[in-house]
Image 1 (cartoon, one colour):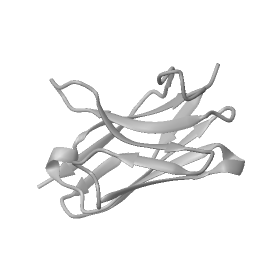
Image 2 (cartoon, helix red, strand yellow):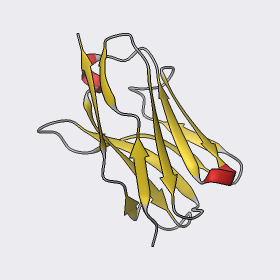
Image 3 (cartoon, helix red, strand yellow):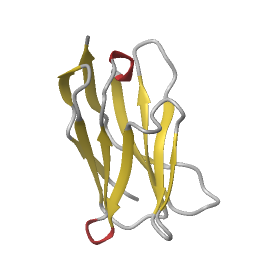
Image 4 (cartoon, one colour):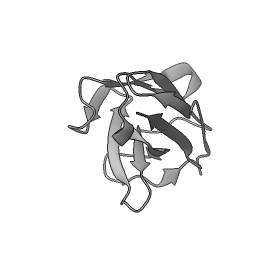
Amino acid sequence: QVQLVESGGGLVQAGDSLRLSCTASRRTYRMGWFRQAPGKERQFVASIIWSGVVTNYADSVKGRFTISGDNAKNTVYLQMNSLKPEDTAVYFCTAADSSFSGYKYWGQGTQVTVSS
């Protein structure tokens, strides 16, 4: 089992920045962020593979969001710049144990609200 604890959400204005953090109770193969806006499906935002530090982003956040991690702390960060009202959602941290497994572990979510 892996416990994921997120922090860093909040209310900001369009154009502002926020940094989300997620700490895992143990090392995993891959960690990522998804988000879910009211009435919409959960969607992929970004991910990082610890070995090789491979990152991946949704097209909607490329150039604005950066995912990074601290191996020693089992912590992943999502730096969100130039936030837009459409980025408003609950952001969930997630983790996978291997390249063959899907995202099995999920955090409780943290609210990000961007006002126009």
